[in-house]
Amino acid sequence: MTQSHRPPPRGAGKAAIIVVVIVGLMILSIFVGFNLYHAKTLKDEQAGHVDPADAPKSADDLGSAHARH
Image 1: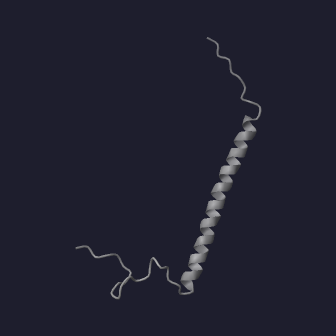
Image 2: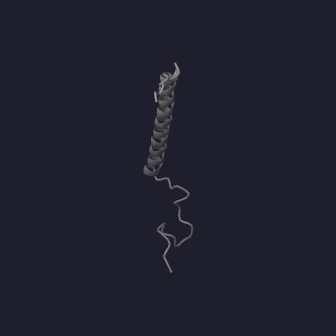
Image 3: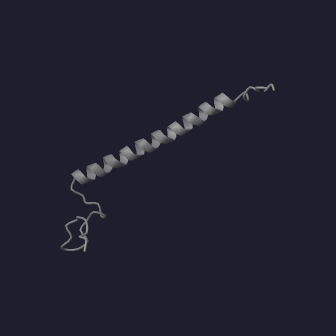
């Protein structure tokens, strides 16, 4: 019962490194994008701008969670 161990294809190591680099760049670009978005929204909040999703919907809306009945 001898098993023959064939070496991997010639470019397998290089291809693996390229895949790891591409995935790493994707993660890095998402991280940087989220940080840039957060910086922009923080700047807007500090300038006094209100996000339309957080704006009051009616005169008696304080922007808090809805009361449970």
